[in-house]
Image (tube, rainbow, N blue to C red; front, side, top):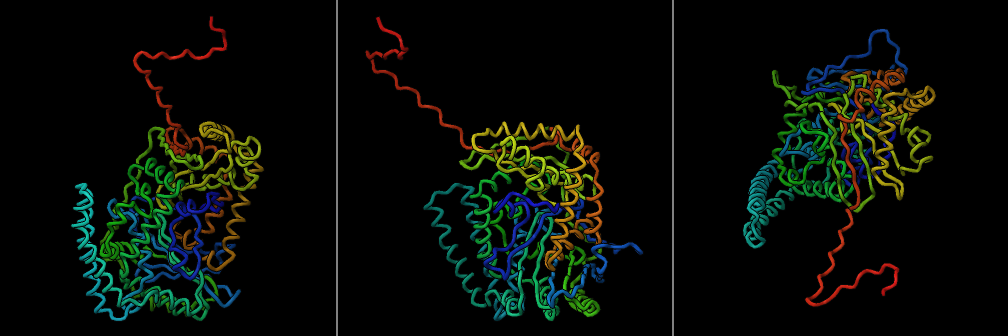
Length: 561
């Protein structure tokens, strides 16, 4: 797992780490971190071993593992530092489980998971159910006509004549359904009971729901979370679809880095769903349907793909009984039903490049394909990234930012996801007056050096210490601990992988990093994405002289005789 800080800020970090609900619609802020993960071409249910008998765990000693009969796994880490706890539920469901035509559906369902159930968020479920069916019919009629007119390139008058009545019928159907909605009741129940940090996040790999509550509200948490995993209702879907469309415009379409990142992924990945943006393509989002979101939930949110984590003031025996009574009632995956096959990315066989011309900060992205965990290359990549850009004293920050003044920012990291083969990436922006090609040449020369010269013992030791310190700091809060534990467990398919991974990072050697560079950081495995301002327009040709006119010779500084 990569515990170094991504130096790419703002919306860019959101693109790399995942997409959370907008803070204005949640009781707290999102605090998710990045991670690495196990490689698989077909995602299946998890079998999670406990700690080996007799093995000592420096961090995870108190951990209790509860595996329910339906396949869902819960990890309980009790502490009595304060009468509170954090609950995290992470499902092995994200952008990687989508296909063209419905990209963005995992993120859309995450939004729907806060809209309530047949008993939460409704004034009259039987009547609302009928109204929602009418909304769905109107959505299919309106969206279908709109897409047909777009294909036909119909003029504005024909378009409005056709869409006007359908648009009004769609709006009327939504208004009729809206009268049955108790707005944000799911959020309000939690908030009244003292919840903080309530939010969710969808990434390429997983969807995570989290909240912190007083210790005496554990039963409330278990009932609320198990109910929305049993009986979610796709209410207010189309108004939320508009919100997501605006979110895409903000994060991707109107964000220069967002556009560049999307181009990089589409260029580097020709088959894998990692080439799709987690938020979805614009043409897919505007055509998503509530019935599709519900089917996505039914197909993917099976208990065997879920991990729950409780950290804080927990009565362990009572919690185990409660989990069996609530989450244990979720229907298990039907016998013999396999998950949808996920296409594996074929090997890259030559350098790829893409150029984006925008009036924005020049930016360079270099990305090399690599295996994900548990392949040893993944831990080596994480340590190497820390050596190169893990802080202001790291090798590349010292060289490119402080000494040579070629870059104003430089960062190395792995992306875009964690459960399929991913990429070792470098982000850099040049200092004023430095051409982007000069910065690229300097960075690639340093990558060449990594293939032939081992990293120094001092910088390797500093990187390992920093990674350990970053891990420990992330575990200081209940929520941070619960998020990291859920994340690591999904990555390693192992309840104790968080601590095993930390040991793995501490064991990485300079020779192993050099071997990683020789194997993977090669030109044929590289994709380059660059963003530069538009080229200056060519000067207009001089006008031809009128008939009989003469053109004066250009001045040469000499004397006419």
